[in-house]
Length: 428
Ligand code: CMC
Image (cartoon, rainbow, N blue to C red):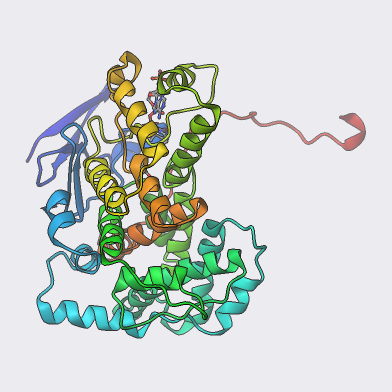
């Protein structure tokens, strides 16, 4: 028998098995806790709870390490591309050339949306947030592909995976085109994944959009960096919905909704809005940080802090470099980048941020790049969703194949009224 943890309660001691991962992190297996003691665990925000065993992504938050399927994020960002990383996440290994070419071809074949879906976009108000539209359209895919939505059928899962990855950039660009009142631009299958997205965003029927390969590559790196991040809020949501055996589209749509919030993916939009506010008010970084530290002020330094990283987020390091490269290539200076760097410099020396181990996260610099390449602020989180998609799908697929897969159903400690009699209206 391996290691055990002992729990004593009401005079009875039970042994709880300790499980160990390949990177030697340990967890207590609580499967028998309730049946043997009557107790449940209480862990708001799941600060200490592992919900699954997973072989997709490894994070060491203390050391600032992130690896997909064992490959360091730095190496993937430098040498790989988003489609290859998507394959890696989904299949566990880097693809051979033929497999990658076949995958890219499959994605090209499925990049168009069903024509009837266009009407669906047009039903939304022009000022609708694109995350709301995106979540709705992804969910609506369940209505267009009803014949291939069985989570237990491998061919249904394969084709739904291809459809989602292929159509997500088209959905994202259509959200934007609708908000601008411009005609939708069909995908161009001669272009690579990111160039095609930029084409659908910025071309019009009257004007071709010439994609700058450096911009397409910067976007590709951003998508790689966002592609998976183990059991974060949106991924856990995708798994939770998937655990009820809801189809892949419904599960991913729920993930898009979870990502939207400013504590999660919505932070990239919130960062730019914060930087713009500082620029407009003309206050110093130091003065703004005082507001973020003040417990009577609800403001936080957006793009800073992380549940898992207690060190510099390795993705933020890469994004900062890409950000400076893109701006210098475009010969653009950015007041917002200057403010961000000032905030970072002051925060990393400030006792409040140092003692709480708050560092820049993935969202701190990404918006400055998106802004430089012309992406509107409310589309930033949609780009996060485009990047996170292969991770969500890989995690959903892993869950469906997991023999221990059960419906996600936490318990609670009830704190409401105890039993009481119904009182008629005239007695209240
Ligand atoms: N600014 C000011 N104070 C902060 C910040 C911040 N950005 N983040 C955490 N703190 C403080 C917090 O007030 C608390 O202080 P105290 O111990 O005195 O009460 C302490 O640091 C711990 O914070 P927490 O909220 O308990 O930590 P958490 O793990 O529950 O939250 C977080 C993590 C990411 C939600 C939080 O750091 C935050 O709100 N950051 C700003 C939003 C943001 O950038 N989100 C993107 C996260 S990375 C990408 C992603 O997940 O999508």
